[in-house]
Image 1 (cartoon, rainbow, N blue to C red):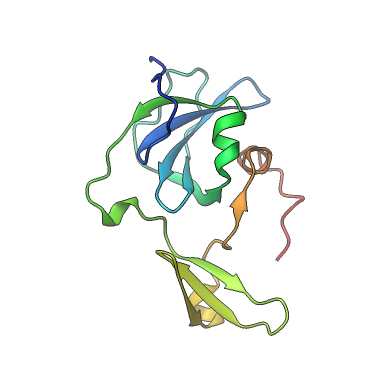
Image 2: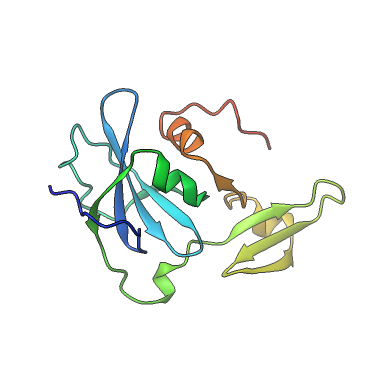
Length: 142
């Protein structure tokens, strides 16, 4: 495994995420400021996941990709433009209780049934992503 030396992160890049256990998680950059976290955890930087199977896909702050010490370790093109988009996410209006779905930059009214299994629309910091990978969910409210 060789680190890819470039300053700008691109859609399709695979990023290594050092964990407190000394192991490594990996994330693939999606469009719409999102990252897909692979299910497989590696013992070293060279233990890249072989399959495109993810634990979760969430929005990520741009600064987190630059300042967390995560490095680009691979680049995997998407099969087509459609595949670059993260899946739909839900929005719950905390005042009215109404549900919406966010997808491809658009928000559309929805129902509880359509939203119940979707990730909540949010942008995550690096420490929260690491917590979630590690199974620490004390931040999670729903």
